Image (tube, rainbow, N blue to C red):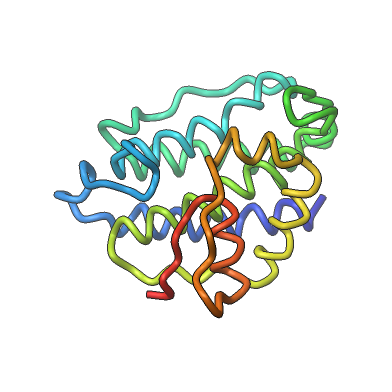
Length: 184
């Protein structure tokens, strides 16, 4: 379980750093995610991080509204997920659902891990920043894609786009998930 919690902590810390760096006038800016603003994207990731808590037997606690305190909301959500991962009864609870009969820890490591990495990239790009993805995360996300299947990937991330000529591993992954990575 430590490996899952460590990976979640690393990914969620990276997401938190990016959220913390959004300028006050940047919350209504566009993202690579269709019609979502920066605030919408953060709200989505926060919601996806908490959606399985109740199904795993944990009682989600109230968090600040993302509309009023995006970073505070994210930090509160992250704290609840980490507490759930530290509780063997919650971490090992079967949550089922569209992804299959996974434990809470597996959902966090796979599906939520993909949310954090890909939407972390989306958020950084929305802010005009380079957004390198850890090569270990690229490999882990490809394995997750294989586990959930193409139909679920398309449901969550939309149609694939052609990768650019000479694309590296990150650009190929992001193209598979409907994103254009120009390397900037």
